[in-house]
Image 1 (cartoon, one colour):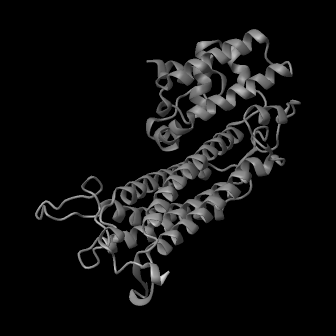
Image 2 (image 1 turned 30 degrees about the vertical axis):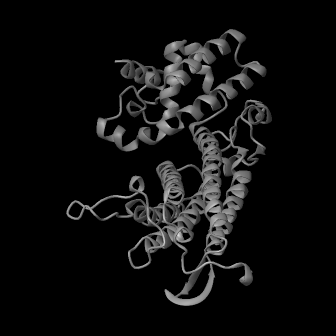
Length: 373
């Protein structure tokens, strides 16, 4: 009931038509399922924008108070709106605020902005948090690998090229090679963060706004380092999203390579490690087996993650400058890519920290004695 009321409110002040979209067309156009992930950031962005609108005299203190009260209510309980009933999160949020306040008050909230700069703002804030989240998970994995490396400083193993025995080395040296690669992944995330951390709000639909807004003030309130200066670039470009997804793809490639090694080491033929019961699956026909299903899925999801990047690059390559509805597909791509990386990092940390019978527990191929060091 509430969603239909909100949708009607939206139509009253926004739509060029007095008719609702046909149901199948609405479902096709709607990005509601992906927008649920962006609702929190749309609320934050709207709060900052409205504070700025009050400071330049567009909103009275009473109007600002009413809008912020409605936004706070939504921030605490996101189930108050059904995003899927609207074309996107921005429309649903705006209609909710109007329903909670009035058309005269809530209708001012959209002054000097467009859904085009709103969605880029939401994505940049979400990606900032995703990068911090990913970095924390990478550091957790690095700590787990460093612990195992410290325990295996004297453990001798065979190093392979072409899966053929090549040279003798230590297990700690091999584990530290993973750590080096993961630190480079952290560096790449840091560089992407700096480019993502610029505020696009104020770009409007494509050409900015005739209202003399304070873009720097909004950027400051939202914790951005600076502005995306050009309004066309702010609303048209998704290269930073592609760069973020590319970094996620590289991370997944690193994790896939580590997983492939762990899978090999857990076989009876190698017997280097014994993956714990909690982090392996059994066979329905052969219950004595412990299958490294989590690690195998990391390999598969690495391919799917790079596929998401390739798919979105394909969307981007043929678009003319300016916002096009094709860009709506960016949300599903980067949200799924991040989820793949988050889960893969968590699973790999669980496997490495929980695995038993690492080489040093059984002497490995041999230990370096005092006379050999």
